Length: 252
View 1 (tube, rainbow, N blue to C red):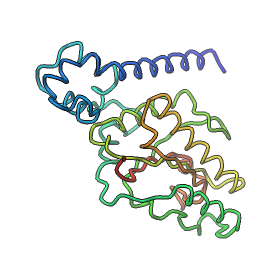
View 2 (view 1 turned 90 degrees about the vertical axis):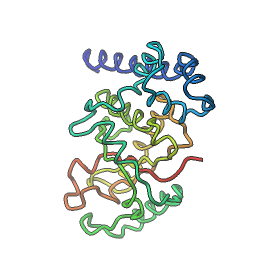
View 3 (view 1 turned 60 degrees about the horizontal axis):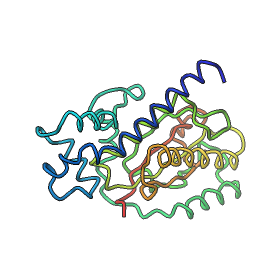
């Protein structure tokens, strides 16, 4: 690891820790506002946060600073996480679920594995989606860089994962649960690609849960390898390596 990479990693990780700490401190620093402005929603994170974000007056500088340091104040801004993407646009893409999907992730994994092992649909261009039901869901396609043949997220993508966390924390999306979907290009062995995509999807889920404190009840992960190409007409295109985040239903 180069000296520049080490420095970037340290700064990025420090920023993540500060943001997590700020989120944990919001309730204490905004206690007066929650009691005075938000009535009986003090114990409901979603309603309390929505109340604070929409309040036009009566929020102290200390509370506003806590909201800003936690990253919630930036949710409505147009700061770029990657070209053409803003937190606001991501929220819009994930909102609007009409029919919740009762998905059995374990069964879907087994279905993908069985298709790979049976060696059917050998030509990527002729391969139908292994999980067509996922195509109808509200979703994001996010570019996250990993180490080669590895589930390790590269430091330059930490900010993008943080933007995903900011998006999922938005009051409009707090009632929902999501599926992290991993993909690969159609090169090499299909079974290896299926396993690698699962490890990468799991890595993003774990990062959102452990580092950004997203509730594990709101997140599942599945790897589809090259069995559901994002660009089926170009099986080796880099877009096929990207991660999807799909809205699947209401959180329990």
